[in-house]
Image (tube, rainbow, N blue to C red; front, side, top):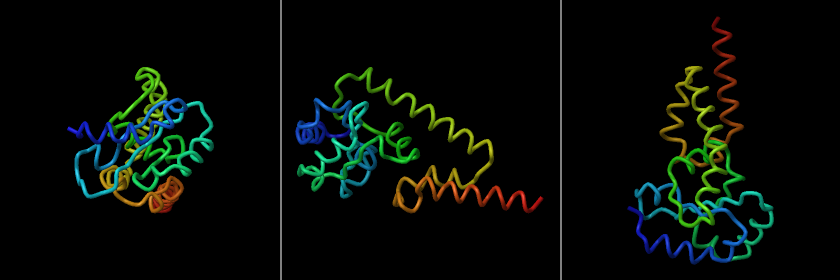
Length: 159
């Protein structure tokens, strides 16, 4: 179980945003209780507020030096899926509202995974197990799209 002290510390460090966001989530290795030597990944769920305003406040604060901070709305779909499936709620204004907000993204993510599985893309299974550990620039949604497009073209070419 993620240490309560860590969750309290994160909540206190992001106190300045609480009246402007839906939630603060812990994800990646700390949420999975894996490598404690890695950075602490925090995801801010903005909701209906202006993402740019929240991002500017984050950059002006000192939390970005201590944590790897992401804004949920700016993440590619596969990372949104990782956050939804494997995060721990550090703080939220209203758990029902946060769950409802994330539900539409979960639905899109589940449909995307199902579509890729139906099409038989072995790469998806590899990505599902390994890509979350890789740099997001290597497996951005546009790169994934190009890889899948190349695979479809190759299958069509083979007849």
